[in-house]
Image 1 (cartoon, protein in one colour):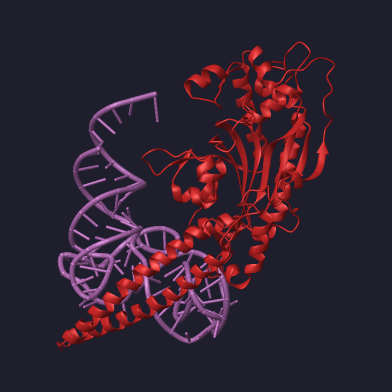
Image 2 (cartoon, protein in one colour):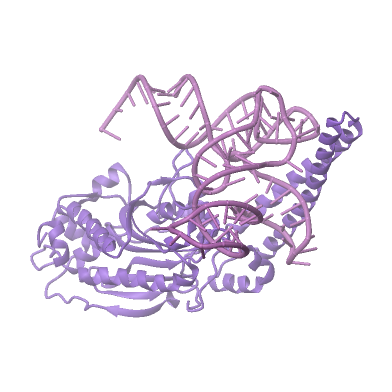
Length: 420
RNA sequence: GCGGGGGUCGCCUAGCCUGGUAGGGCGUGGGAUUGCUAAUCCCAUGUCCGCAAGGACCCGUGGGUUCGAAUCCCACUCCCCGCGCCA
């Protein structure tokens, strides 16, 4: 959610943002609804004032045993009118909010303008793309030949894009999580394992309406949704709270399973465990002072880079274009890992600064002194490791001539072996 | 799932029976006064509309009754205790 004042004072900035994002949005209607709503607030407030005055009058007159029948008569009509106005106000408020909640975030000036991923900008590359002197396999063939996954039975039991992990791949999955948690703990992140289901208002705080349809699973008959990432649950933790400024920045290493419908992805990455409905992820999440957030954003990215450097996975960093970026983010870096089996870089990390967009939706504020006006803080999120995709990169890049997989040194003490 | 108790401003609490401007304490911030590890006093300390003056809202949430609801009624929700079920 943007600052409502921006809509009144500077609608052109919003128009430019919408154009850059290539989003159709009825901004004029929102402006109209905002105006209507505020006019109704003024009217109802005035009428309530009248009601309060008469009410006090009645109370006083009653104390001194005076006749109040004419005042009560007056109150009848005031109350009737007020009820009508209140209904209109609630309606106006609802339609305003409903529309307002679908308005995307502003965009940082450094973000390249463009319709889609073709406008993304490569920031840097790290590591040498591996060269093989034998015919390599993709992660699906490799994992199946080593009995590390069972995709057919997963399809039978759950459907497409599900998987059974088996044998050493289970261990590798757990090891990545453990390594990531240790890695972030050293950087003073607080490890946190979140609820995997959260209610609607929490979900609305972190994502934009139509994303519900495409990515979020709903629990039938309950006000509960499966989280698509621990970001959803961590961000909501401090909803409706005012945080003491001295506690900022709050840094969390969120660990959870993540559930995604992948509704818009028909046919893409159909095989294997690259694009799946469920995976584990360790996430960096930061509640930051506004003036620190861009700095924190860069630090989160370098954490992610350091992690993949330690694993020895070659990657490149992309700055997403205005059209490719998520609607709640003001600026997003993707880290794309080299996947030898696909002979390409593929997304494994997404690192975003959401400014006060989520904080406004969730009413998360901070202040340094008690009687200071509280202000909205900034929220940032970045993947540290999404296990399935990272395992794909490891399988494909670290495969050996005899059809096995070398485990990077940093992980060996977790996995308890040097080769799978 | 059943029975009982509860949810009031950052925290604690009064008010509810008997409807009529939500009071006090603590903490925190600012100020005054004083000056031996401090004390005392005053002000401020939820949200919204408004340039402001000012006003409205706020007692878990949503309804209802009423001229008027923290207070009465109904539903829901969350927390605590007990029972049941259970990894």
